[in-house]
Length: 169
Image (cartoon, rainbow, N blue to C red; front, side, top):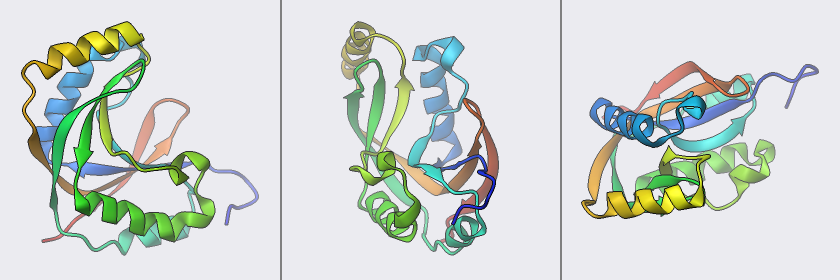
């Protein structure tokens, strides 16, 4: 499926409503080490898809309505912190896409899917534990809305946005 010349891999994320995106970007700006914060907050579906026409075709064929995601708790990532995301729809979407891309997925995308939005990473375990303690004190589960998919090109650190596939009601 890959051509002779290896292209940069594509990354697939869930697009969220603007208000939620702004909230998570703010959290990331507050807690992510500034020198490593080169991306907006994101909810990863796949870390690496091939930059081939079949990828674009499969994503253009996705038929989903916007759906709610439940932000249920905070996750300790070892040297980072994320918000845990739960929803039957996101699990179904990821499972369906996984079956379409099964032959080209890297091991990282074949393992269990744990939807989350990282707000601190590449820090220390001590700082991660302290942030979880701080944020847990006032945490109340809340909902955000998934509005589509975003496809990105990986550029050895930063990402370049390629396409948005909006869900339709």
